[in-house]
Image (cartoon, rainbow, N blue to C red; front, side, top):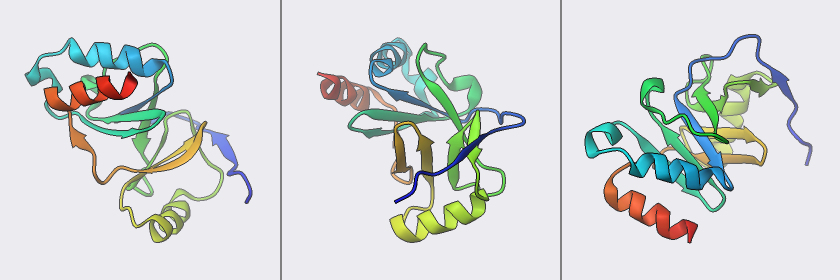
Length: 138
């Protein structure tokens, strides 16, 4: 299997999500727990073992040290990519191939760690979800 080549973007799209890996998850969880229920409305989360993705409007996303930002690609809205790089191959082709293999309509394609993460089942951020995320961190 070959690694996917990435290129720097000429201009960055507005973020519509953030990705927190490793220790940045602790800072993200603290920032989210510091918000009231109204400030969490509209935010959704997908949690993988070592990485969390929070989706929402740019103005609602917490700005936390160590997180990176993502956005859906203009040519392939179901494909979420980092805001600073894009795959070297056309995003609509990448999205079509990944959709056929994964069955997900919306997915994050991330360079480091390299992964494809389905976003279709993003959960609304509510107090019980924050409590669960806290338990997952240990």
